[in-house]
Structures are given as C-alpha cells and as structure tokens.
Amino acid sequence: MFRAARATFRHGVHPPEHKELTGAAPIRRMPFPSEVVLPVRQHAGKPAQVVVKPGDHVERGDVVAQADGFVSSPVHASATGTVTDVGWWPHPDGSSCPAVRVAVEAHSSQIARERRVPDWKGLSPEQIVRAVQDAGVVGLGGAAFPTHVKLVPPKDATITTVLLNGCECEPFLTTDHRLMAEQPERVMHGVRIMMRALGVPKAVVGIERNKPDAIDAMTAARPTDLDVTVLPLTVKYPQGAEKMLIEAVLGVEVPSGRLPMHVGVVVQNVASAATIAEVFETGQPLVERVVTVTGRGVRRPGNYVVPVGTKLADVLEFCGGLTEDAREIVFGGPMMGVAQGRLDVPLTKGTTGVVVLTDADVRADDALPCIRCARCLDACPVYLNPSTLGQLARVERWEDMERAHLADCMLCGCCSYVCPSRIPLSQLFAVGRGMLKRRRATP
Image (cartoon, one colour):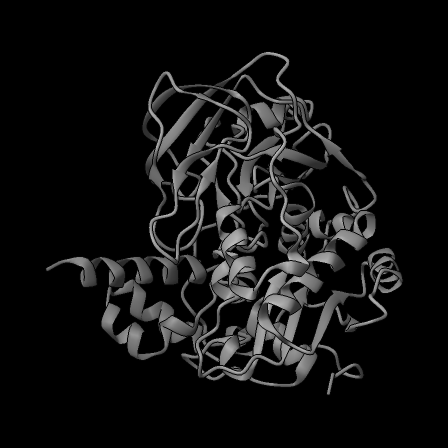
C-alpha cells in the first residue's frame, strides 16, 4: 500500500531549491567539442578495460573499453574520430585514472551509425539484461551503479515493485524534471522493459510536488495495461536516496546493512529508464546524457544533452563562460557534489549537473567546536550520531567509526548543512571511509 497521505520520510532537511534558474529551460543539444576524454572508471564496480590504441578510428557508439566482469560497464565512443592517446587523466572525483582521448572529426554527425535493434518483446529477461549491459547503461542519478546488475536480483530475493526515482531533490538540478516533462513516453517505455526483465507486477514513479508539469506529463503517459502509479511526494532532501524513497512511498524501512532488493524493491532513476528505452528504440548505447549547467556563476544556465567525455572547459564555453564573481564549480548538486580543481576534467555518465557558485554562495568560515546541540541527530535520515562520528574522525579512530555504523551513512550532507559550528561532518565521514578502504586493501 502506498503512503500517499504522508508521502515522505522522517528527518531530512529543506535547503533552498534554486531550481528556478533552469526548471523551465527546455533540453537543448550541445555540439561536439574538438576532443572527448573517456575515463574507464565511470561507474561503480570494476573499471572497464581499454580495447583501442592510439591511431584507431572509432565511430560514435563503438566500444573503446569493455566491461571487466558482471559488476562493470563498457565505455563507448561518444563521437566519431581518432584515438590520440590512452593514458592517465584527471577524474572528477579528484583522482586520476586511465582514459581514452578521441580527436573528434570536424562536422561529425550526432547520429550513431545504424545498428541492429532487437525487438525487446521477443527477448528473454536474460537477453534484455545483456543488451542493457552491452549498452553501458548505469544509474544516471549520480551513483552510476551498473543498471543491468539491479535487473538480476539474487534468487532468494522476490521483487514485487519497480520504484522509479523522479524526486531530484538536490538543489539546482533539473535534468530529471525536464526529461519527465518532455519525454514521459520514453520514460514509461523504459519502465515497461524493466518490469518485463524483472517479472514484477507493479511499478511506482515517485515525483516531488515541486514538479507539477512532470507529474501531469508522467500521469498522462502512464500505460493503461500495466499497474503503474505516479505518486506525488512531499518536497524534502534527501528523498531521492533509495532507502528514503522506499520509506516515503511504501512505508517500509530497509534494515541496516541490507539493500532495497531485500524488501522486494528495485529502484531506478527516471533517466536510466529513458536510456534503457532508447537502447531498444535506436540501438544507441549510453554516449550522451542530459546535464544541468546552472548557478549564478555561469552566464547561460540550461539543460543540455552533452556527449560523455566532454571537458568542463568546453561545456562552460558553450554556456557563455563564467561571471566575474564565479568562485567554485561543483559536479552534481551542492549537497553531495564534488568541487572541481581543474577545467580539463571530463563529464562522465554519472555527472548530473555542473553548478557554478559565486562569492556570495560560498563561505570559507573556520569550523568551531561542537556545542552538542543535536541538530545533526534530528536531521540524519538514517538515525546515526554524526556528532560522535565526527569526533572519532578528528582523532582518526577509523575502526570505532565503523562500529558506529559509518557504512550506513549516505554522505547526504544533512548533518553538515544544519551544523551551527560549520563542522564539515560529511567530508570527515568520506575521509573515514577512504581510510578504512585503504586499510582493508593493505596486506
């Protein structure tokens, strides 16, 4: 039973939305840059393995790096051109990783070469899953988890519901909003294919109420022969997180250390659903995505279809460049996004937005001592004690952080947002996770 009356979860925060900059901006297509840079690590799981070399000619949609195992995803050329280099390149997460550089042919067509498009209705669930993996589809809400893995739940997990995430609760971002408003039929087509692959009887699309045009469009496009519900939700952050969305829609709590599939649910982003539909409509793999370029620090905000691998500098140039008071550039939203230190980093499959903040938006205040106000406890959507975790992080007691359920933290930033002492709690937790991961990898 859906929780339409309540339609939200406990705790969370209400940051300013700032969606007015691009919420009504229709999706436009960005032209090809002169070069695309394709990192092999654009998804959760094992990085892809490069299968091209300098001098190779590739066409838009050709595989340049193949999946390395089941929890992996291939990388495809997003433009036709010549491979100029395979080597290390800056990654948006602040590290470096191998990447394929492609010099784009002048006047190259945005249309991929004709490919065989199988009729999904005649395919088995296993064949559908394989087609989704071969197309390199990953979660486009930011986490970039390989989509095909979610379509193959363990045999002991009985999936009853596909839950489509149309919340887009991060401030500034409007890609999912515009996609649902402009291409609702394609999103619903993707829902139909996922329901077939999983063999589930029903689906629910959760959309926050600050997107009334998207709610209307998705409701009008709802299939009449399937049990698909469009459910308006109360606006709250981080409602787009899987566990929070499940609680808001179904009233079910996913236990600590468990996954949505353990309560019979598979959660997918609306953009991922639309991409699945496109795979079976055109045969084109995931070579481009809609990105919100926004903030008061960019001259021409909007929602743009951007080829994967386009460098940040080229995106900003197409959007009119930076204003004089531009101060910080974030990939993703301001709550969970990553600030960028270079303009040559490429946009990846998981880049939902480019947010350019100004001097007025950014505070560089020093952190003050914790005053034990408990605001972080009231905000945490998974009922952790961020204050205690932050103190443990400051004295580098990483194992104690793990025992305090650090693994349950989503790094949503709610605790940092409400902290009157301006303690960067979420960042401290990210450091703790990194240190624990490094210690496990050390023999």
